[in-house]
Length: 198
Image (tube, rainbow, N blue to C red; front, side, top):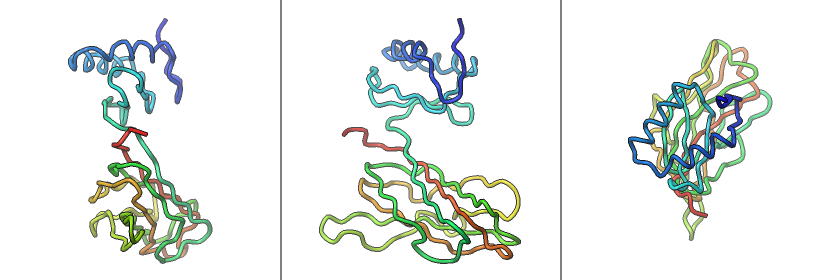
């Protein structure tokens, strides 16, 4: 009986087969990934901790399977009501382990009108003596995330993407829309935790 592709659910039988396959060579793993692609089995994330490739993640993003060390971690910022230009518009997020920033998405329930909303994600490293200091943008000037006035948004990729355990992140709004400004903002930053040890 073929494995069923239920969104968000991975068959225990499939997990067992994958765990059994992990001791194989890299070419055998590549063959397994190819089989999964051809079978259209695309769970968003399948954690294989406890297998021979301990702490690895077999993941499918955009229909392509890959094996990476670490695991995904998301930071969320929410701003309720009409959004205004300001720094530090939502509670800080703190990364618990060393990580790399992968992508940042932003969306408003009420989209901004006639002008894009522009955002910035700022990082401050933790200093054991002084605490947090200056915040620096993880994006270059022309690459900051935004919320378009019309249509769907893509994502932005951080330029400074190496994060250390304990780093703090804040959300700034540098531009809002015009009539309306935009309201009920959600921002999500996807990271890959590198240090998988407790």
